[in-house]
Length: 84
Image (cartoon, rainbow, N blue to C red):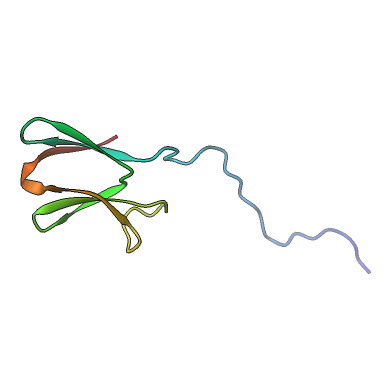
């Protein structure tokens, strides 16, 4: 009976740093009247007809069927979107 250790080929990977987004993601939106609004908890956005809708999720994937609507703005009123 051979009791020597054998390599199974399974090597565990250990993370050496934090997540790429340790804190919640956010966007800063500048509107046509020069006001700015911050959308916290959003990790992506998309155009939906006349609206730009921001989505968030606890999962690492930005936009999928499980994403939650965080905020919507009329696209014609947005002059700039900046990820914070």
